[in-house]
Amino acid sequence: MAPTVVAECGEVTDLLGGGRAAGELGLNRGEFARAVQLGIVRAGPQGAAGAARYTRTELDRVRSAEGFPGVLRERVETVAGAGAAAAVLGAGPSRFTRLARCGHLVPVGYRINRYRAVVWLYLAAELRDFGAREPGMLRGSAPPGDRELIEARADLRPRKWRERHVGLLLKRTAGPWERAAVLASVLPEDDVRRAVPDAAERILLGALAPPLPFGHPQVPAAAEVAARLLRAGPPDEIDWYRTSLAFALTGARGQSKSTGERGPT
Image (cartoon, rainbow, N blue to C red):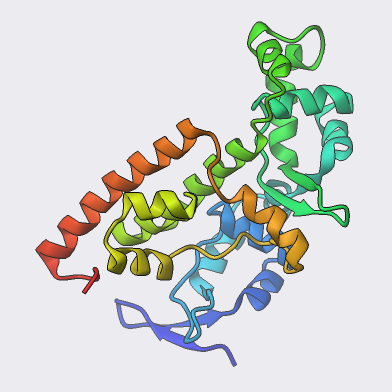
């Protein structure tokens, strides 16, 4: 039997685990994780062990959307790798790879294959939309900006994925310390120590850090490759997240002082 929680207005609401919630929406585990990541399905209060739970009210809201369940499945459908993504886009694999490396197409996730290579995942709906919106990008020569990136052997996919990943996490966080923890999680450890000299604050940010993305590998060799995707790399990217973290910490510290809510002790 599903656990229950009493909502503010007094009614009792069922809380379901992720597996059961996915089944009630007609999604597999990966599709459901993507729906949560994208904010299509909103998590409810956490369970005793910190696992996400979902209310029947939320599932009813998702089910009541027009076109359910087909539209929901279309929104969370992903394709893996250049070949499959290029077929959805309606372009050749080399064209697709160039568009992705130059930042026109942003991954929504990743896998690490048996050769320890990153296989990027893309939302099929976004690929179709891009092809319909930018047909000129699917043929002809590359624009000057892309040519410069190609000559520099740039690959913006990791950076663009991090930007998207952090943005989606921030949309799902409620408190200022949680938002600061999201920003800290993308910085290299040395930069976190420099940005947050207070050890108590670093412990708190670590405790509030978001979980690893769905599909993050457990095998050590593959996990090591994936871990590099989670950290900002270029100096200007690191500076951007450090500045954002400093701003978030200012707000978090201010709220802790004014309300006495959670903060370093």
